[in-house]
Image (cartoon, rainbow, N blue to C red; front, side, top):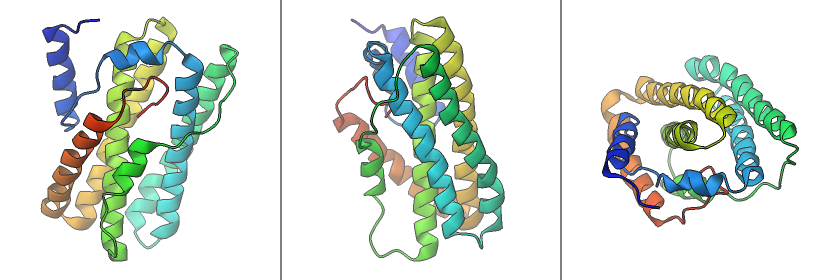
Length: 209
């Protein structure tokens, strides 16, 4: 299916707002809706892992009060999202499938240098979380606009708004603890690297990332 130039330009504009450097191929939505059980299962596990990641950050950095204060409610929110996806699947009589490896996230995690100090590892983790939220927001936006199921359009619009807020939160935390110059410089490196990941990964409709 051909993609119009206008649609391409709109997707690029949305991506730029999130600072992402490469948009998702809009045809990803067509692939995703071919098997809703697969994409909803993967989405559910993404929400579960987001909650776990926030818990892990709190456990690793309890001496960073803003992190504890900011992420504690996110844990509750992300777990609530996990339950929302399960509820949606139940409505459609779809069973939760097995969790799969997330190649996208694993490649992001591999970008952090070895042997970093505890403090510098925090910067890497915050920026990885920000990127995951930004890319999730971009993909939820695509689903909210282009999936044929009206109920899922509304469903994913809510997730899009939430992920945008989480993206901003992680970037703000990175800037608070490491300064805007250092955080933004490393952020740009991550954005370039993430674009290379997106360019190399196979476009799959059974993966949220």
